Amino acid sequence: MTDFSKVFQTMIEQSQEMARAMNPALEQFRFPDFGALMPTMPKEAMEMSFGNTFNPGGLDAKTRLFVTLAALVAQGAQFEQQITLTVRHALEAGASAQEIAEVIGQMSVFGGVPAMTKAMHLAQAVIAGTEEGK
Image 1: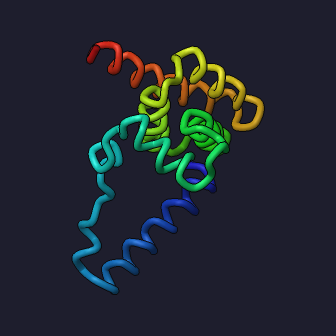
Image 2: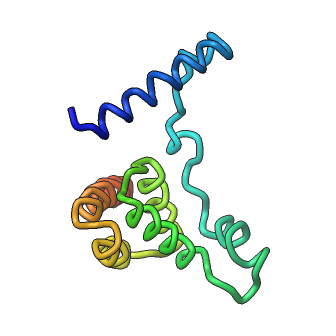
């Protein structure tokens, strides 16, 4: 175990102990599956929520989702559920598999090749699942 792993493990244990002290029920709490929590929104709903309502003439939903995907990958692709959800939403907003791959590939410069590779695998699984559903 690396020094970082030891520090991280200690932090987790301390957090669990603090949660137990505050409320014993929190010890059993697990984060929900984001995909089940928020299914893919229709493109029109995304445009209303992410673009046209608050900033008419600004970025469209697809572009905003590309920016979100890029940020998630640049952070090291550590947020798997958020990446898969963003890819699903980007597809719904009209993004092609090629465009999604280009966004992820561009982020290899900022997040590193391992992050890009992980994000590509996640995106491929979403795209493959989407193609099977058609």
